[in-house]
Length: 152
Image (cartoon, rainbow, N blue to C red):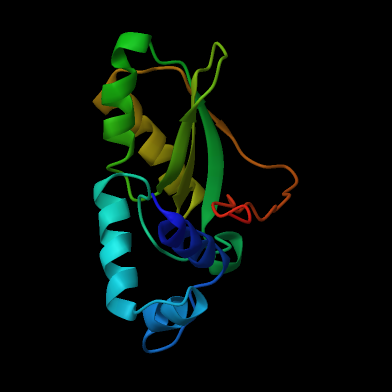
C-alpha cells in the first residue's frame, strides 16, 4: 500500500456521502480522480485488505435484533467454521480470542425467534454445539477508525 491507498482508506472510514457520485467526492478529498479511487478500492478488495465498502446501521432502530455469540471451535475446524459463518448475511464480523470460547461473532436478524433459528441452523451445519448468544444488556457505541495515514 502506498500513501494514496492509505488516504483513501482513511477517507472511506470517515464518510462515504449519499450523493450521486460518492467516489468522486472521495477522490476530491484525497486529490486524485474518481477512476483512480475505484481502481484502488477494487485492488484493496482483491488483496483482502478490505472486505467491503458499506454503511453501518443501528439495527435496533431499524427493528432488527442482534447478539454477540461466543463459540468453542476446535482449532482444526476454525477455518471451515469461519467460512460457513461468513455465508450468513446476518454475521457482520467474527474474530478469534485467546479463550476457551475462541471464536466470537455478531449475528443480526429480523426477530429474536429468527436469531435462535439461525443459531440452531449454524449448530446443525457446523457440528459445533457450543454457540452461546450474549445479547447486550447495555449498549456502548464507539466509533472505531483505523488511521492508515498517520501523518505520513
